[in-house]
Length: 102
Image 1 (spheres, rainbow, N blue to C red):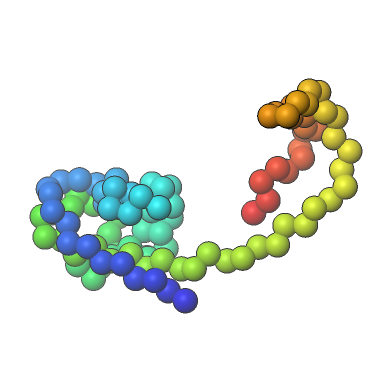
Image 2 (image 1 turned 180 degrees about the horizontal axis):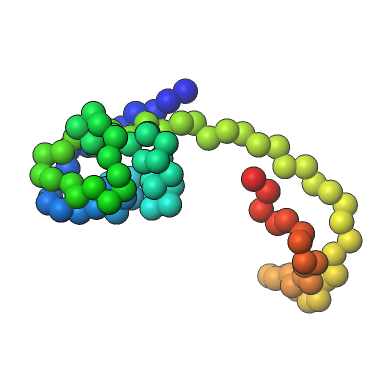
């Protein structure tokens, strides 16, 4: 399912990849750059580079996709707990252990 958002830019000369995160604060600049490269960001119905200097009145269209659901499965991995109290846990994470699965 695609979610399309449209804006009319009011300003002059701001880079496309810098303006969009201001218009939609749910998008990071890196996410916007990737979306531009994938052709999901249009200016006046055309693909533009991230460095494109916006002009007053430019029509910006963003085609967002619904996030894909991923299933992270817990594993029983022995981890050394260095310190623990009611508010914090400090662990000695082994090198190469992935903590943020994609």
